[in-house]
Length: 142
Image (cartoon, rainbow, N blue to C red; front, top):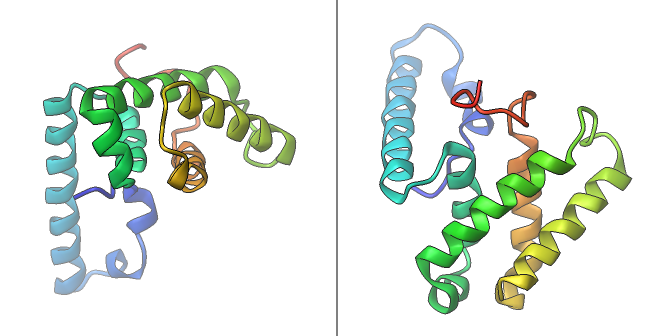
């Protein structure tokens, strides 16, 4: 499963008290557990895994850069986002543009294939929007 955007998936399938809702929640819990195990296997945090998956959707990037390089890019992107976002960054277009520029530079510096770079930038920014409000800190760092 390459989609770790679980907050986006909490739609009408997960509202209510009926049996179908409960089954959907159980399925989602299994998917989340599998994603966490995959992140541990790759040596990536939850945030890093989200960026890794965003980058790995480009098959040419996987072929050209390989798994280890994509992990390094994902780690660097998490650090870049943590250092450069403010509380209201999603509301200010200038802050979003600055983040897109930094992501583009990071991808270019690592040789990320240009054929899907714009899509990767959009996906990384979308993932960053889903980060918790206490973005600069992970629960392990507290």
